[in-house]
Image 1 (spheres, rainbow, N blue to C red):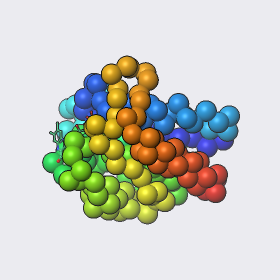
Image 2 (cartoon, protein in one colour):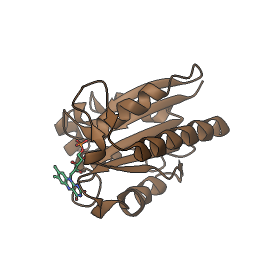
Image 3 (cartoon, rainbow, N blue to C red):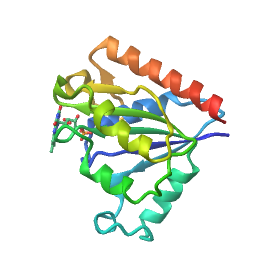
Image 4 (cartoon, helix red, strand yellow):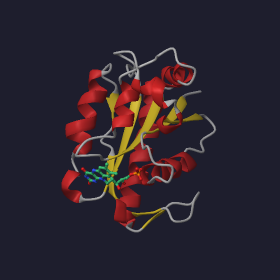
Length: 179
Ligand SMILES: Cc1cc2nc3c(=O)[nH]c(=O)nc-3n(C[C@H](O)[C@H](O)[C@H](O)COP(=O)(O)O)c2cc1C
C-alpha cells in the first residue's frame, strides 16, 4: 500500500497553502493509500536552524519523508520563491531523498507575478534531490482560496478547482505506476 506524505511548508498557523493541502488530503480517500502529514512549522525551530538532523522532532520527520512513495508539497510564495522554513527542512534531507518518489507541488501567492514560481524556483531544487517524478503542479492565487471556514476550504474559481482535481487525478495515476 503506497504512503502519501502531505508536506506543508508555511510558517503560518492559519495558512492558505495548508488549507489547499487539507482539501487534497480529503480527496485521497482511496483504500489503497496511507496518508501521513508533516507541517514543517511544527518542527523545533532551533533544530531546523542549526540543521540538527538527529533532533527529537527532525529525525521522525526525515523518516516520514523516507517512507513516502508520493509527496504533496504545499508552500506559500515568499519573495518570489518558496518559504525559508521549507528550505531549512529540505536542507536537512539526504541529497537523493526524493529518488523514486512522485511529487505534486502546490504553491499559493498573493499575485500573478509569480505564477511560474513552481517551475523556476521549486522544481530545480526537487529535481536535484534524486530526480523524482515531479508533476506539473498548481499555483493558486490567494483570491481563489476561501479558507474562512476551518476544515472546509472553498475555491472561488471553478477553473482552479477543476485544475486542482485533475492534478490530484494525475498524482494518483503516477503513484500507481510507480509502485
Ligand atoms: C514574507 C512574505 C513574502 C511574500 N512574498 C510573495 C511574493 O513574492 N509573491 C507573491 O505572489 N506573494 C507573496 N506573498 C504572499 C503569500 O505568498 C500568500 O499570501 C500565500 O498564499 C500565503 O500562504 P500561507 O497562508 O499558506 O502562508 C508573501 C507573503 C509573505 C508573508
